[in-house]
Image 1 (spheres, rainbow, N blue to C red):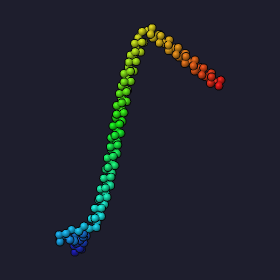
Image 2: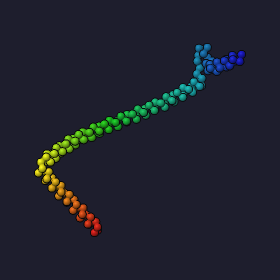
Image 3: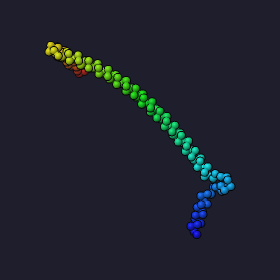
Length: 130
């Protein structure tokens, strides 16, 4: 009998807010209204989060597009610089193919080196005096 009492008590607590069910009307219990209010608040909170995430992803997409355009421009400029450098290297190869051109380039390089050494020696002497 104890089991029947517990079963009846749990059944009563289960259908506690539904007293008017047999009469054809249904009354919402306070816990149901409270649950609905909590659900509405949670739904609004979720909508706010979704809209925030949508804005953030939109901003990220915009940044990615800007960076892609920038990288394309940099890539194009690097390609043009590569073309210029390869042309310059080809010209140097033409100059250094002949021995006479090689000797004259060495002579010019020695003069430039001598000039730089003299320049730094003069600066060093002025630094020591001053």
